Length: 192
Image (cartoon, rainbow, N blue to C red; front, side, top):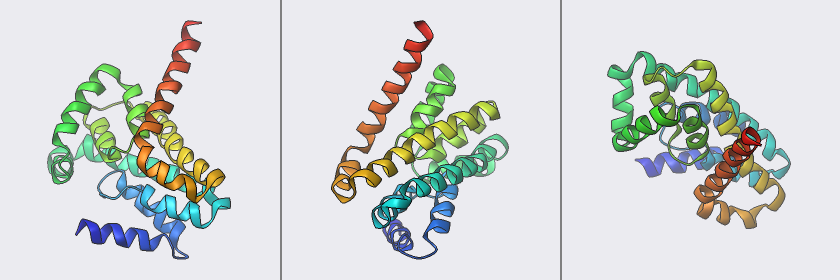
């Protein structure tokens, strides 16, 4: 079933309604949908490289908006819906791990994890469960999702098809290096 869903999302990326579909997939992935928006973003950026940054904007805004739904699920509906979502996708252990990291690092864990390929719904729901301040959650979500989607779209915009396999193979490494450099920069600025 998951493969059929994945194939359906890929097929949507080639239709005239693709930007709307990208927005919907980005929105629902932040709370309940199992397929990440990258699955649509990559082929759309390759098909129309001039619009790559526009597609990244759609992904970012819709993902952050969907993050509010995930946050609300964690905040208000953890028992009824949130725990079911986490368990359905086999994210129970990651959820527990995230909660511990969240307690220790707070805002930074949202920024860092939001850039990685781990399911964003894990972050949004956990943030709601922890009653993390909504403004800080919003800022961290915008930063992390924009960095993730604009990194992908920017690479595809400038390098096209040759970079696609590199992105698919090294996305986690790329986002981790980028996050470390970003945090390192903030630390240097703070202590210099």
